[in-house]
Length: 126
Image 1 (cartoon, one colour):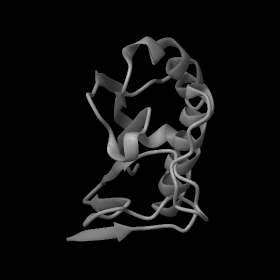
Image 2 (cartoon, helix red, strand yellow):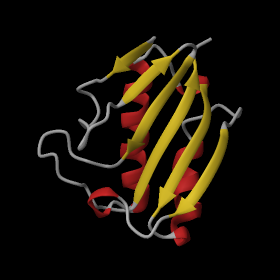
Image 3 (tube, one colour):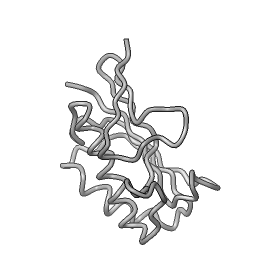
């Protein structure tokens, strides 16, 4: 049985999907980009500010599912430019207390709405 998770504290899906789904003891959070909650437009500032916005949205989705960043076991980061890797890491690392999840970072030719960064995570409910 699956449980659908959606919160108004993160951007609504822009396609036929949900912000997150819990199946068993695992929460799967969809790719999240830096979209303004009111205008629903992509926010393009600095890569650090965009990454912080994405991580804050992921935190809100985790909370809506009863989790925190401590529950995250796997993340995938998509970048439009791998030259942003170090800056994204600086922001990303601040959301974890040292026990970092497994991770893949991929440069993508194009992200939704021409975003610079998109992040998805998987979390275990313990």
